[in-house]
Image (cartoon, rainbow, N blue to C red; front, top):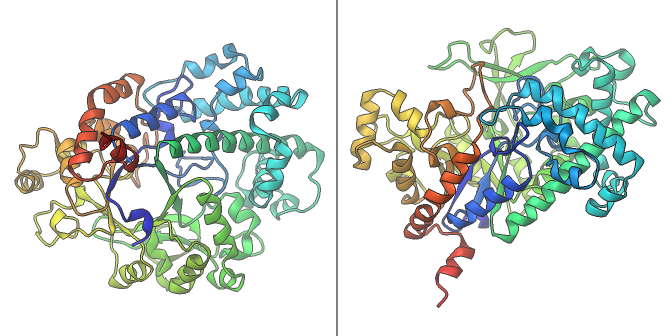
Length: 512
């Protein structure tokens, strides 16, 4: 078990998009600092979030235009106002957006024209921003390896009517070197400007979290989006031919819940070429994440052992086949580069003994979800009496219903087992889950923010495989105020009782 997981602790799962704000989506502004204050006051040690990358069609943080870039939507407007790059009245179209959900389509149409005004004014007078955040040119030099391909990709995507890169003109389809054409230069530097603001504000927020002993857990999907700078600029490392055609794509096979399986459509890796290159692409990808977070959750860990390969022309996942992943060779290389192993392996679902052995042989923690525990089988791996210290326990994840929503929608047999096992009446399933989770042997327990508010299915963040209002839920200012005023002390008390109090707070509590 890695050192970061050696002490009992707790955390909260909340994507920054869900924070309260006046401009249509959560940001790295004051509400994010207030959120960190709440975490500290309530005894938590971790803030976990979904991937922070720039989202595209579908708005999923798990399908982003770059593994290393950040979403411009999270940029706080206040520093741009105080620096004179934005007049507050110019934000009226954003301030009129919903406070209870992210309206991504309207946000996209309103956000970027305003941000382009800020960029134009910055070009005319960069000194206020340079004094606050440092040199943009220096930032580009420091992050050139991922930032240059990303800015080029975004520039060419704009020139090609926002189509996916394999539908671009022939001259743009291949990753170019040298100087970009003049008609892409302005967009290139605009994209660099956005990433400069994102990373500068993130670093400020990260340092603030560190000052309160709050560690940040990020999330890295094992696969990258088909339409991304990752695939466009690194084609040899994927199963993509010279014309940009995908040879095979990712998914999972049919199961009890889905007779057609799941066709994700992400390009699969060419693991041989990655290995021949010493896995440098992966090492750089993870290093970029560890510059943002203390710990990185690796989504779909199973695929490092074996993965479902589906012919690219397939309409569903039924014709796929299992192929071997890179296994221990890959993870030993990562261990050589990141000896602290600050990783959390997502090993939920249909996981074989060999996959679990790969995880345990590397000393990586896995995941358990309490909502999956109460099927009536006392051998269920997620029941508290079957847990272990190296399993990070969640009451639910971003893909689950809230605990209250789960309880209200599940069958009576499951509800009865839940009540009897926990010896409760079921009137407050979210808090019953939390109290029970805190008292398990799992060294880290993570609670979705919706459960701290006892919210129902209306607050679900994502329903996998279903179209709808995914990724849109937001916590209102009123809910946040209620949470801070009504729950901080109780949560801190529960953390103290269960030996999970933030170490910094623990020292304060024991002072004479």
